Image (tube, rainbow, N blue to C red; front, side, top):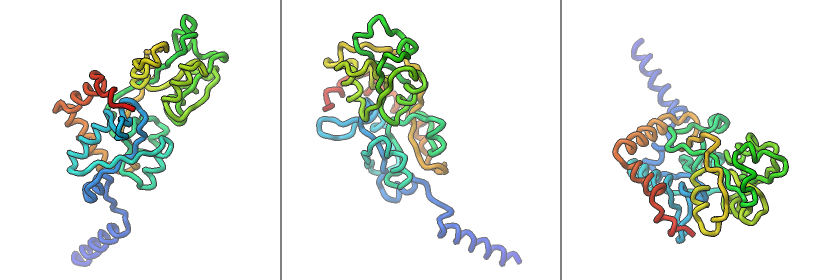
Length: 266
């Protein structure tokens, strides 16, 4: 009887493996392949962006390089438009998403997220003509003001939530959003604080005003397919490790304290 039970158990395990019910995680696949494939949209300064040679660089990219070294694999960045990140992950075009993605309840229904590696928030860049008229997000929430945000981002969601009375529009890149404010096509641009801070430092944008206090709380994290808990466990331990050994602080200072990298951009 015991022999029959053991035989049945072995057969069941064999069938589970060969019917795909026991699936390896994305990082296991990456290790077997020797390459970690990461979906990203390289237009989010200073997290992922293009340098003068067309290479993708940035804070999150450096975290991914460190992650790949810890796994013992090569890093392959798959550049796609932001709206194609989740569909691309589902279609197995890459193993995980590393693209400045904010953890939201809506996204969490489709994805599993790692622990956050940084917290940001939305801020506002203003045209100079609003000096003295707008000093808070509440002041901007009026029908007469034109506000732009990037399509499909939490900036757009925040604009809809907090600036519903204003005339809202969308663009596909942050550069276009800033340009529209600089040239007076719109009154304000809503986007993540790190990007807006750096945009303000560029000479062509020096006349812009800013509501610098973030009005949202947005943790950024790596996104994986739902149910891939082994990969999540590894990434979370990796994030804890680099926080303890000084790697995280070194990379954070490189991108958020030093400014030498700005000269490398297009």
